[in-house]
Amino acid sequence: MRSLIKACLVAAFMMALLGCGQGDDVQAIRELVDKGAALGEKHDIGGLVELAAEDFVALPGEMDRQSVKGVLWRVFRYYGAFRVLYPLPKVTVEPEGGKASASFPFLIVREEVSFPGLKDLTQDPQRWLEEVGQNADLYSLEMELTKQSGEWRVRRATVKRFTGRSFKE
Image 1 (cartoon, rainbow, N blue to C red):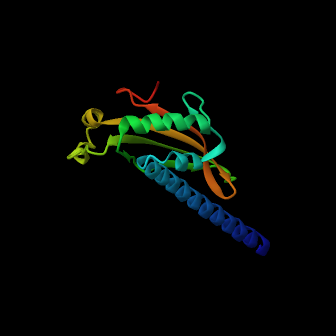
Image 2: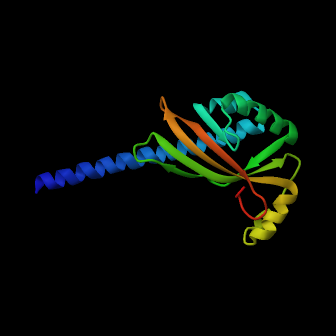
């Protein structure tokens, strides 16, 4: 009986450690997203590329770390000063802890644009999209992440633009 209780306690302890580690990883990934948004708003291409793994691929287009620099430069030039708005990212960490995924919609909003009353439209998604669509570009970002030397890095990023009906291409 004692060995059964010991085994249960050890199992509970290991589950707690695993849960804590995953919670820490989820928080670290959300902080990585926050850092990426802040770097984007600053037009810091080098900083953004540093968040990517060596074998990074951006989709669509299958661009590597070097190729994505030119795309980022063109995006920053097109938008000028902008803000990135997004809800809390959905993050899933694989049980072994070395891989994870994150997904969330986000808006790119030119800096001078404001959305008075947008919070009042949360119950009417169609009107919310109409309001946002006039002043911002809505996207969906799905990321695959890998942990390298204790740090999370983006291995694969898929960006889809909202077409007014869905995020499907």
